[in-house]
Length: 384
Image: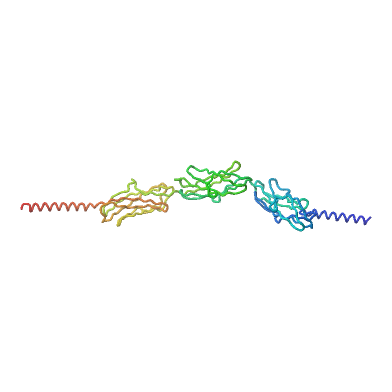
């Protein structure tokens, strides 16, 4: 009885140990077939495509054939098994060799952040557990962004923004591109160097868009918001660009009456009242006044420099013109300039030179002397 009982106990122990050894190795079965990939746990973002390189290893002395499937894949996820350029459901491996295959898993865009587990199974032979960590909360939306949404320039500038339109949906989308701007503003959308009003973007893809903004003439200094939108019937996104106008720069040199002519005697002086007008939308600073005169003429200004002239403002300057003593009667041209670092204005004055009154009186006296001399000669010698 004791020997027979000992044999039965030994048989049971061997059977139990064999079953424990089989159950403790889920990635291989009785034929010593193994599924292997180096990256069994990875982190991704929503919408990514995961490509596993998997080997089915046959450690036996006979050909092993296995039906392949993916189990436990979360809802909404998709997969494809390929080898040698073919989509496969079953694979055979020669003795003591391995066969490579590719498992492509598509992570959906609309997904919660968290850890997801599933298995690649060689039916009845091996199981390969896989873990995917989704690091962000997924969305089913569109994104429109710009790395540089703010630009500054004068009213005559043209502003070009670079924007990225990302389609984070599962379908190709045709987006209408619009901008909500005041009348006079010109906004154009450029894709691949061409002006467009709409653009196609593939699923989970990004398209680069150039947005060209041109302000209207006479726009005032200040900050302006440019709301831009990309929209379809199902999804949309918008962003706000900002244009900072530093103002237009313009100056005008004239006189209070607009008359650009005067007269002066040779060697004499004439004072003129000039007006310097800031006709732009930005302040002007350090406006200097200069003159280009005929030879030996002089022009002085009071003041010679205007420290600041506000937009739309006007100030008066006195110009003193001094003619050359040897100037003969006639018309002369004097060019006067008001110049700031950003703008310049020139006015051309016609100056008529008259002879001196003293020389007129001298002429009269000479004529009178001649007349008196002739009279004297007639009186003295006329009786003879």
